[in-house]
Image 1 (tube, one colour):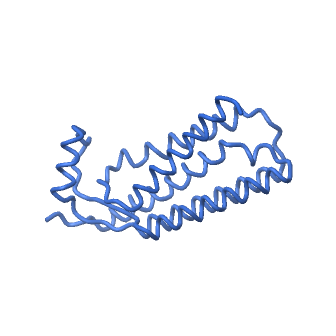
Image 2 (spheres, one colour; image 1 turned 120 degrees about the horizontal axis):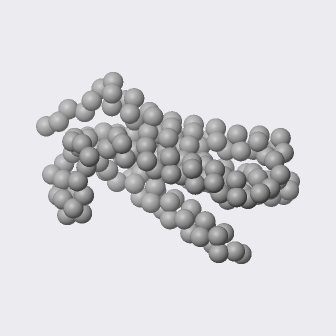
Length: 175
């Protein structure tokens, strides 16, 4: 196993743990920050896939398309399941303790909860299953590690799109 493969595995596990934790805890909603993560994941996934230097078959494209659709669909559902509340004093204290100043006023917190976490486990299960299938079929691109980051980015982007849309339609009332 190469150093790059080890680093990619550690990054993927770290990203999944980070996302799973954020699913069940209240987090301040910062619109600009919400789009940064998906962009980083998609770019990293595409760069990783490009550096794999493998042949692309139509079946690779189909499997990556299925994985992308599942990830984006789960992200959409996560956005729909997201609950909102006004920012609490506890959240403000945490933000101040971290000396983190948001770029704009933060008035809303969100979380997806345990149902969102179950959706994440489903996305991971589909990815693992498609990874094994791709490997068994000899599909190098579909079994490449970059597809994980691409799926995470698409999931987070779909979630951010739904959350942004929901907040623009019906803002959370601040106490």
